Length: 254
Ligand SMILES: C[S@@+](CC[C@H](N)C(=O)[O-])C[C@H]1O[C@@H](n2cnc3c(N)ncnc32)[C@H](O)[C@@H]1O
Image (tube, rainbow, N blue to C red; front, side):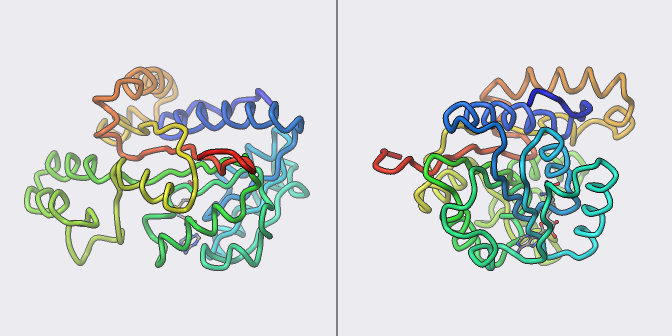
């Protein structure tokens, strides 16, 4: 359960919180092996390591190419029988995972792109067992403002700041970006109780790619990231927010 993936400053903060949440859930349920759904799980960046530490993972993703890569990766890592790959999307989640079917639902980098964001979050809540945990990662609009300004695209930065959906214009590939209040309200609206919100990628998206990709520098950067995201001041400019939310246990209060 404690096996850790290679240090990657882009995802390390997410893994740290996720491992803690899984360990707590294993303790409270008395089950080491949890049923995890990875909505928009793509090529298995999260699913494969989670299967390697013993969990059963169902990846639901509309992309056949991503699912093919997932199948290859899972086979290479010897966890093919612990991962189910289903071609589908957020709107069809209820048809794949029955009500109360999952201990954990991951939804990382997906709420930005779905057609019906409220429907997706409702489907996530319905798939969770009482007491189950949603791990949600969303792009944060204020970091995008900063990145655009640093790149000299001041008009885009201003539009991003003012636009209600956090977009810089018609050519922006993302339909929406979030801020902390917005993502909290979205999850609460689906009946999920937000336990924790963490910043992800405060510095990694701003420093040169060569720093991120160098193994020695990456370890130092991961340490620095871990230190800065603990400061609330930096959370508001993190490239993404990682939210852990819980479906209240039956009879519990959110
Ligand atoms: C940015 S990638 C994130 C992949 C993975 N969750 C991760 O964190 O590495 C977004 C993923 O969402 C998937 N996706 C796009 N539209 C979706 C939808 N409506 N429902 C579920 N997944 C969707 C894409 O195919 C892609 O794999």
